[in-house]
Amino acid sequence: MIYVKPLTTEETITLNEMHKNHPLHMSRKRAHSIFLSHQGMSVPMIYSIYSVSRQTVSTWFTKWETLGICGLVDNSGRGRPSLLSDEQKSAVIRQVKKYPRSLKAVLSNLSSELGFTMSIDTLKNICKQAGLVWKRVRKSLRKKRNQDDFDVSKEELKLLIQQHKDNEIDLCYFDESGFTLEPCVPYAWQPVGKTIEIPSSKSKRLNVLGFVNRDCKFNSFVFEGSINSSCVVACIDAFSHQIKIPTTLEIDNASTHTSHEFNNNLKAWTERGLTIYRIPPYSPELNIIEIIWRKIKYEWLPFSAYESYHSLEQELFQVLSNIGKNHKVVFS
Image 1 (cartoon, rainbow, N blue to C red):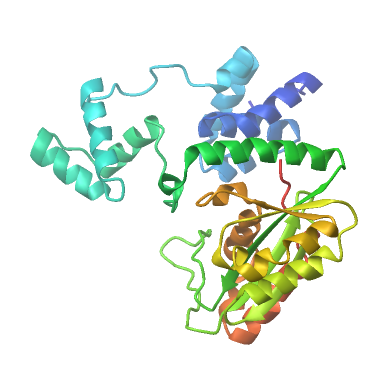
Image 2: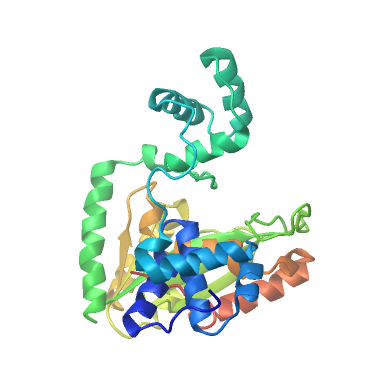
């Protein structure tokens, strides 16, 4: 079969949804191949794209023509039956959870303690079947916080968010973050057998004090060196003179936010329409500006920023000036 029959509008929508959202990679691939054929792409081009044989693509087309969308999904039980029992698979997963950073340690334990061996590829497949994925481990302060206070604050913020949506207030978030020539190491697509290397060295620290609202309107102040209460107060004071409607500013409990100098300015800010809302200790996920810092460090700053301190300054200011424009986060 060289081409599939022309698709109806409903079939096109269904195949597009399958290509984008189906949980199985092979089913997404088959759906896309049918759509490509519908657009006039030849079989040789399709099998070269997916690195499969001509017969495989022809089989996909035949199953589509005879079975429709069901022909693009593998039947249950396809492939060789597993050599491991459910009990053995459970034992494997327990070992993986015990040693989550090293599959080699898991394989060693399976051999010495449970008396069976397998390849590392088989082990990876068992992990995937159990819903496990290899990803970066997150630092967390969750165990240190008071969960009741966190839950109360979360509910209060829901009300503030709704007031923001109703244009009754502007809800903004404030925090500080630092940037040096020691980069946060991101994931990146890299050629097999090669590794992208990012320059890294000691340098002065650029501290950014930022304000962002739920519409991703962003303002910032940048300082070299340490930040004290006077810096924080000066920035919030300048911000308070810019607000147009009553504004709630969410902050954390850093020492620069709880000092006498800071608290002495609360009354003046309130009179200008700026209310300070403190989130509970150890609750950074309640402050959405943390997403902005993460985006800057892991996505928006180019690798060239770490070539020199001058480059870091230039690239950082370029990113900061484009937040809300070229760089934007849509907060739910």
